[in-house]
Image 1 (cartoon, rainbow, N blue to C red):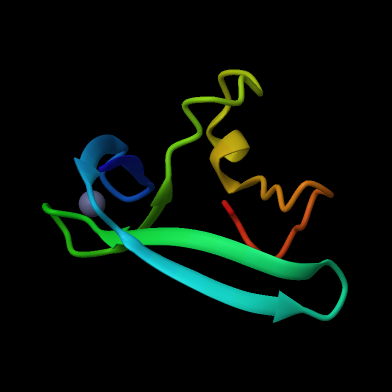
Image 2: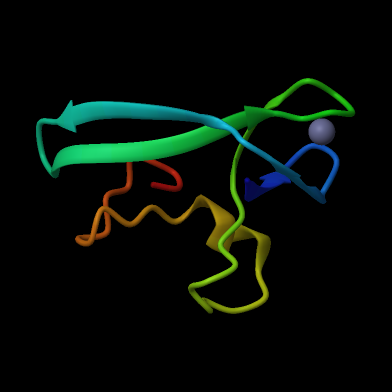
Length: 75
Ligand SMILES: [Zn+2]
């Protein structure tokens, strides 16, 4: 179980999620977890509960991949 954040509802929820792996041509192997929002059905990203970036909503969009991958949006 992981914590996900819905940008549409601005709410967090806990579920198993679906793991997506792909090879980014710039950043290499990337992994992203997604889940459907229980309220609106929108695809949601993992909430960044471990990394303390700050308070802005934009922080949820910031990818990682260990090198700041901008195309992942939350791996
Ligand atoms: Zn939602």
